[in-house]
Image (cartoon, rainbow, N blue to C red):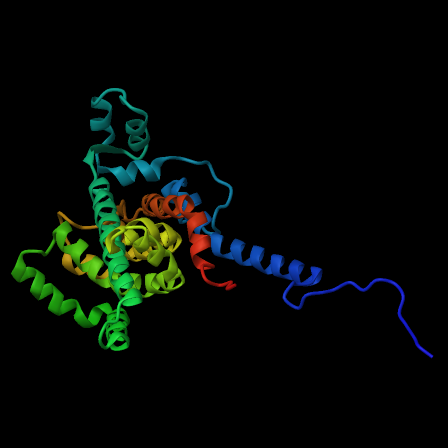
Length: 321
C-alpha cells in the first residue's frame, strides 16, 4: 500500500522574513527614525523662534515664526536708546526693522560666513586628499605583496584609535613651530592624516572584492598598470569611494577638539564658533539653532547626492556568487 499527498506545497525560504516580521521591522525602523529626527526638527523649529519663545517654559511648539535668529547669526548688533533709534529715521531693510524692535541697530556683519567657508574648504579639501591617498594605499595593499602587510595595516588602524587629546599638545607645539597654527593648510593636513587610516581600511575591503581578472584582461589588451587602475578599478570601486568620502567628510566637518585648539581667527571653523554666539543677556538660542541648521545642510546635501552609491557601497560584497 502506498500513500501520497495531494495538493500543492508552498516553499518558504528561511532567509525571507514573514509578513509579521516585516511589519514589526517596519514599525521599529519608523519609530527609530522618528526618535532620531526629533532633535533635528526641534533645532530647525528653534531657529525660527524669537529669543523669548526659545527659552519659554513649557516649550512652545506652536509659535509665530520669525527670521530673527538668522538675522542675529549673520550680523552684529548694539543696544541703543529709543531716542537714538528714532533719530535714524525709518528702517531701510526688513532685517533692520526686525532688529530695531529689540531697541538694537546693526553695526556690521558677523564672522559666521567666514567660519562657514573655512569649514567648507577644510572639510571638503581634507576629504578629497584622504580619499585619494587612501585609494592609492588600499590598492597597493590589495594588489601587491607588501612586506609585513598585516602589521602595517594594524599600525595604520591604530592611529585612528588614538584619542585626539593624547596628541593635542605635541601637535600644537609642532604647528606653532612650523607656522601652521591657525591656517587652513594646517587643518587640511591634520584632518587628512587622521582620515587616511579610515580610508585605507574601508577602501581595501572594497578593492579586495573587485576580481583581479578584470585588470589582467586589461593588461592583456595593452593597458598599463596605471591605466588598468584608472579605467577598471576606480569605476568598480566608486561605490566604496563614495561611502568612504561621506564618513571622512562627517569627521572633518564635525571635528571640534583640534579646531578649538589650533584655530582662533583666520582658519577657525564653524563648530567652535557656533557655541560662542552671544546674545543679549546670554546665548542667543535662535541664532545658535540657525547656525546649526545651516551647518547640517552640506552633510545632508552631500549624502543625498551620493545616497545610491552609499547604499551600494554598504552592501558591496555582501552577496557572493
